[in-house]
Image (cartoon, rainbow, N blue to C red):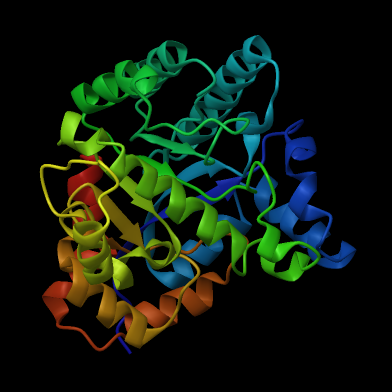
Length: 320
């Protein structure tokens, strides 16, 4: 088995003081596992680098574990804490810039402040884009009030990684079934729905060069492309788009393999979207680096395709 050189994009850390935001999902993890996760989230010097070396991961793009300031109700505090988190991450990256890059945390409560913070992080701190943990207190981002943010992001030519979060209001079908409400199902439904709001809300028509990245093999969206076109043509509900819905999935919406180590699923995603729209990731420390590396190293694709997925696409999209 050949170990391919890799870049990974959904790799988390925890800044001290941000644990409170994560209690909603960490409370479901047993204490022994939580202790280990805490050690890995806090580590920048040993555990993480050792796993990267064994897996052939040359560079990881670090982001604060969710939900971060997306769950902070105070807008002023959210801005301050986002800046603190970004400065903290920049200091850690400066120790090992050969191995680490960063995604900015953004206070999406205020589109203009979020745009300013993204610009600061890209131009002053050298970050490669942002990772936003879904909606902010129930606000999604397809509305015109967010256009100043999208305009700035398009000018900066950096991607946003749209990461899962709990729904603002629980889905009734999942009521009483917490095992379905989180990472196993509900988070994917929430995040895929947010991405589709952006598609059908015309964000990518207004800003056609935007790149939004979805983890977990695209939260299922690549495998519904044909149906989106079919049913939108039948039931457009007064919405007008410049392209078929499927055409945004693979151009504006890109995906990573994080948390889905299935060869048939990978082959299907490449078949649906094209190899240039798929990137390797782990979802460290919540998923196994070893399993993710073994999965991609043994994937039944051509060498050029694997090089693109493991390294080339991320290097191109992030400007590395």
